[in-house]
Amino acid sequence: MGEEEWPENPRWVVPDAFHALVRLWATCRIGMGGYGSWPDAGGVNDQAAWLLDAFAVLSGAEADLDRLERDRRGSG
Image 1 (cartoon, helix red, strand yellow):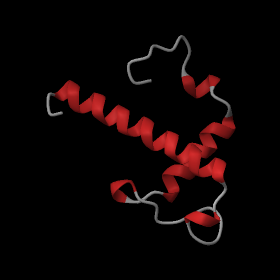
Image 2 (cartoon, rainbow, N blue to C red):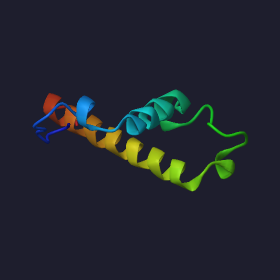
Image 3 (cartoon, one colour):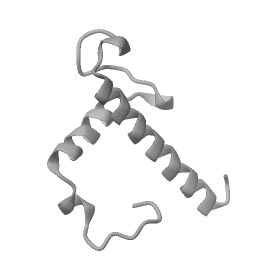
């Protein structure tokens, strides 16, 4: 992933719960890094802290991958 070599396909070695979390993150997002909907009723303050932390990690990883891609293309 990114520039890290994996001996096995991450699809097969990453637990299903993590794949579900990534799908949830993608479903809740809208453009420009915002969130259009949340899994629990209410706003950001009504969400579980672990979920917000996980979303932040995923958003950070996406930003890193975007930066790597821009650098590869020479437009960063």
